[in-house]
Length: 574
Image 1 (cartoon, rainbow, N blue to C red):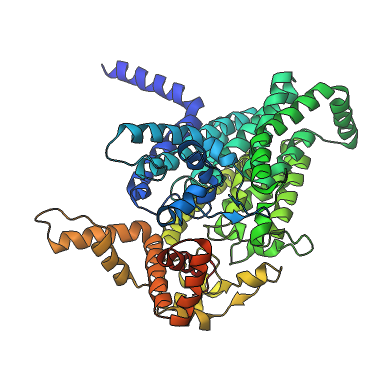
Image 2: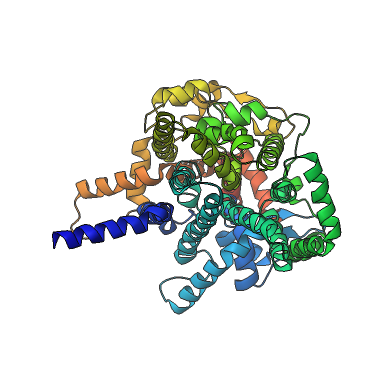
């Protein structure tokens, strides 16, 4: 019996050894599922479909439930939809969704399942915004990330051994802010584009190994979708064009290839444009223009003459390498590529430098409220390759290899700790500074001094390309409106918890404490907005102006007060 067990254990070990990276992906999927059910944000009204997601998602209920892309249904029921959809007014006077519709394409299958479930259920309203829709969105992100990780594994297996692949999968999957964006803020675009770009790299490698018309068309479709979700990601085409280029002669040969094989080029172009046709049609419908820069209507612009490269990479404010240090290792790994993977240095370095320059030139280079600098997450499938090269380079000496592996494990732990800090506001969602960072370093909760030293960006000046911090004096004035921990817990007890018969106050307090730990930032936001509404209503002259605005928009006074309170909160004007 003993020999039989030994033989079977040995067989299992031999089977798993070349598949450790697959096991890592399975563990990531399991861990993320547990985490999602732990925070269960879909149960809370106002969570999940919030911030930018409101716009990315709005196409689906508008098109398939209300059959009204003019968003008139919002105006007809502003009490319900006023805070769920944030449109802009176009030059033609119509209302339009700010973001492009690419992410709605990926949401669509999950939206469809949730909608069918709600239609068959008497418990949930089939309105596009009830709990099942939020649940579907949360797990759609995990679904795409797991697919992305499997394709990333295929890419990495082309160049590296199984142990290196497993380390890189864990480093990217749970050692970066990607983890936060397929769990806590799952429907944001970054996890989805991470998956798509990982698949894109796999397709590029496959295309150059064995070119075909079908592959070229799929590359066009995929690059079109990647760009439709976030237009700045069009630079993935740099990777396509430069992949495996090692010299100027090879660059010339690549140009010649796309001229001679013009059918491949044409199919890529057709696939790219095909994805964009619905967007062009929508823009024409709402604005009379095929190309309509919706972000320009809300002051969005690039300042290419003033890129904030130092800030975006190494500042305490929102530095990529400060809050996601594993990516510093990946960036260093780029310079090991000439020795480790010839033909990958030039395309990956060019893409990375272009990406840094473009993202740092955006007026809001910190990309609003986020854990770390979320804009870089899309490119983590690309950065995984130099990270794997660096680990392989260090394998030449065991002590260096084990030291680097230990450092990566440490940074994975640090990343997970920082995520918990962020969910408890010990890392500020807009930006930090040196004093604030070290005040809460390795602390799960913000201290009193933290709120005194924190500084915030001046959004009005940032729209002009001038980056100024709001001094702590203003923050102190705001303290009266920022809720304390006890105030948040009291709010949860009074407004969120549903009590069972015979439940004692100690158990109720414990439940409230657990909800506070899971999502204190969201409850703080709700309380602040409610306080702002009361403050507005207590200001007769301000209320008179808001009443005029409400009449002009054809909505109730209470709705207008709420919308203005949300605007004050969003723009840090309170």
